[in-house]
Image 1: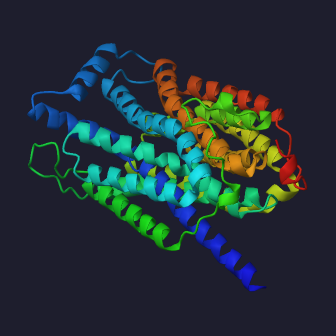
Image 2: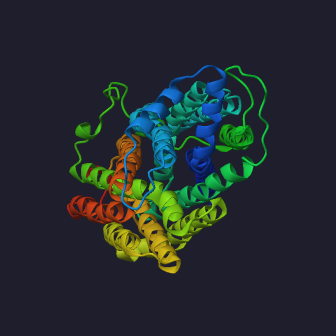
Image 3: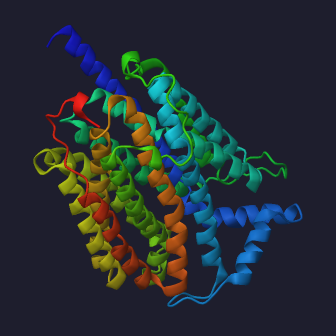
Length: 452
């Protein structure tokens, strides 16, 4: 191996390491609150009662007034309040990702990946720092706003992988990204549940004060600072100046899908959007289904998420990386959708725990197949100068889906029951399959000049 090849290999390893940690941290930040939503609602309601009321108290009063009976679900407004409260916080985070993923992606196409990653990771750390001292609900909301804006850098991180991988190995690189998602999904909820047991709450009633969730925030902040330092010291720019978008390219706007001229990329984005509406909605209501059918306590719920995360890691880290070459991205993605249909249909009908865990395994396997392959299809159908932009639109499509899915699924669940909600989720997966059938499998021998 020549010195140039060794240098290239070192740069690739450094890029993968930083991107892995960036995406892992983002998933931890997104999922760390999952087991904390009920406790957060009670905590900030109590804080507001000491201050004479507030917007959260008004929100809960409104939800109490509109609570309705649901099939198979007790008319106890607490559960409905919790899912809407969690859905609103999760949706806020995802909506901001939707707005900012194309913006950060386009800016990285113009100025390079490194400065945008440094800027956005700094914003992530600032959001965690605010959460440490979120004495009131408004400070918590502000921390989630900063975190959501900064987490739009997923498009930049993914584009960095595309910069340093060949077309033949692109899907394997995206599967590596998927492992980071899986690990973050495992650690996030576990970290939130464990850290909540160590309360550092301050007696201060001001806007900024330590709270029951400060330890989780401190750990997340520490991870963020390690990531920023690692990026600053080890990450080398992956997008050469000669491959950057011209200065006179149009400025990014909010709704970018209509500006994507590549038909294949539009279809992969739409397929991902509709798939994530179904998956994120079903994922979000799993906790409530587990409590309803099996009376799960937090420990059992954490085991459930552990199975999902480990399956994501193994399926993406082993199966996708090994078989995406001979099978192709399109076939593997379609197989993932089919597996998802079966999994949601099973969850809709079953009542036993053994079959429930089998269905969870299939559900996780399905999303493990789909996410990296659709990402790779988007990248493979894009020019070098459009990698950040197209992947930004792709990620923002998923973020908007994550904003809509939990609220839609929650309403279906509590209005018509879990069986109906998961049956609709299974049927809904036919929509992304229709879009995906229209996406051609990329020719790995095609030259950069002939890509549209």
